[in-house]
Image 1 (cartoon, rainbow, N blue to C red):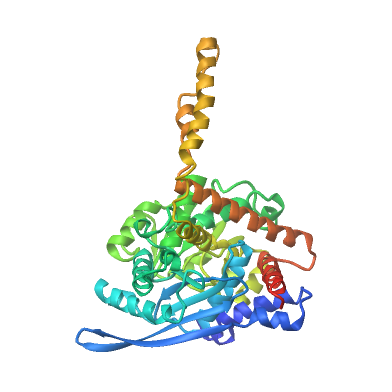
Image 2: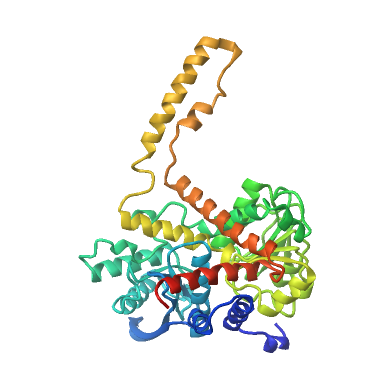
Length: 478
């Protein structure tokens, strides 16, 4: 970025600006508005771990933005860029995100200033367990008060360590596994959690394309089939979003942007092949198919129908916003469009599906995992075979008709197999996620289309979310 970066608001300032834009259109008492805006508390911890023959000190944060509902929910990220402002802004975003998708949580966020790639696995485990200990002893990890999840730089492995550490500290807590979500399936996790945010992006786009008036505002038409897509960031979220859109919706992935550059191919890139190449070579450089572009950020400006920034915040900013050609941008990452860039893009007529809604798939499926842990039974276990037995009655009756009518009528060959199979946990999770993303979008779209003073989906999302938080606080007597 050039010197115009000095004129850019920080990520936290961007969140505050967007909050202010929304509450200006609401009739909230000033005291309640301030209560919703401020971050309740941030805990900073500095702890030592003996590594490689000496004590190393690490700095971590856990921020609670709003406890209008408890427990509070939000990921823990491992990155050298982690700081208090960023963690507090992300915690605020979590509050609004949970309210928007009606997950019964307040907003929280955590972070550790660390580059996880510089440590061996056993070292990372020691660091993670000590961080978890420091948070858990202050109830900043607790199934009923504060429930972390994976974020940038963390995953199933780290969540499993945290859950185990909490369990060791609370040996009589029967709900100990619910202290964190995003765990591996064998450690109390849930099917579909790893892919959840990327799957949520797909479901968000599908729902957008069910609203003709919204599609028209982006200057698009038709369905996702054949739409060209550029994905920035090919980690967990970007990869899964690209994979599902290409394989299931017929979209064409024309650009993939990674740390070391980008790949472009207007006829479409092979998502799996690129993923495997990155896994083996650490980046996209040297990949045989498609054109390699060393300055990957320039590919954000590539001609496409849909742009999916799925990595860091602030990648679309004052310097490049005017050059962005995509008529539809869906924020799979948190805060990838700065407040200034948002204004430029809106004036250009681009439609932005905001992060608060677009990447809520992760917290939605985390909610399902938390419920599963508290109920101590996997989804589908009680009802699946009973569902199959009821379906069997219909299939048997159809068989009887089949035999009576002969060639005049017959069942489709694979109908019986498809109809008989009861829904397993993964199918139930996907169904719940799809339903959540649909209903949340509909509430935003309604505000966007019915209110003359609301010109974009981001403002609509904030209005819906803030109103729900305000309603919760009023119910508590505030």
